[in-house]
Length: 453
Image (cartoon, rainbow, N blue to C red; front, side, top):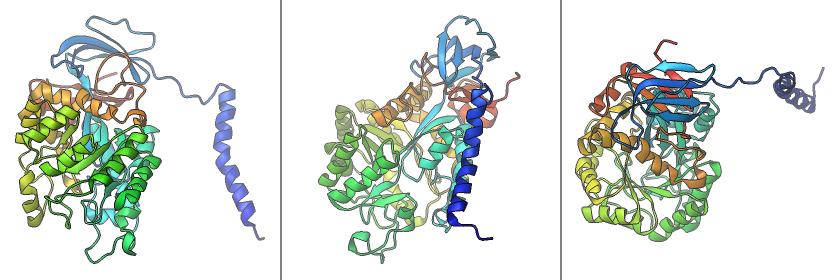
């Protein structure tokens, strides 16, 4: 018997509809509805609220996905609530990484260009859970094909942090996002897109119309903000660190598109001249900035531009000898961070681990390294409420704008860590997250719970 294509499609459509029909019927009968999560009351904890640098004895009540009440005294448990005795542990907001790469970090470059993207995404899914288990409940992804991952995490399909995606890194030809071979012609000269472009990792755009189209495409796909490459990079072959990338007109075009979408542009750039060009043309977040002068940092502070800096040290990302030579001028993060602090520039913490699956656990170590400049409490505030302020700059494109991130106060998202040890005295307790993070909560759900019920 021959079965027509129309019959096959009709049968398949009916099969897809059956679960939805069953759910609807179950709900009509009062069945199959997801039961509301019981309230959770934390007692006997020392609270680090993300706003003050000091700890204080407190109780905290979670209802659903948000914090309902915080008190310096006792809170009466609601009926059916789970009461958690914190045992004098520290309760603090979940950490935020302002420069993470969900797909790039856990994959080699060979994985990225494999014929089947399933391998790349399999590693990214596994790393998303590990990121959450390190205590990072929110990340800003500053380049990569992460829209589907974010969607799956938000739907509770896979465990992972909240994601502020940037989409593909927008780059000029011979810029930091151009990983094509030198003999390959760009699309504008009759060539073909690279594999990296095809999977949404990078977008090569030259001239105002192409830049506008590339940035708009990222917002069409769900970007919270967009990132452009404005200077040379360490791992890219065709662009020395000192190169200036994108003209003022091209930068302004990207910035105007982002403003039209109610959000902002962040820019990969190291050099002082490149940073000034970015700041003068409306970029609001400098990614890296390791060669910024005190004068430029003061100008950033004056204009409210963020410095999203990474505490790089030799060995964090495995580099070739040629890449190490390129990286040498960028190796003084601590001096630039201290100058930014003194200038009053807003500083964000980020990691930028790339194409090195064996080093992703350094995320916690890099956070602790920030303490060398900002102290323990200062680093904790940067990694919570401080980075949350940067996330809020995405305005209407903020996917979590219904509540505050990075703080423990009534009405905020219930993202928090229960810590064995006192990170205000010793940040290093956060590096042994397997042992010292007794509980990890995101969106009111406990993803890690080592305490007795």
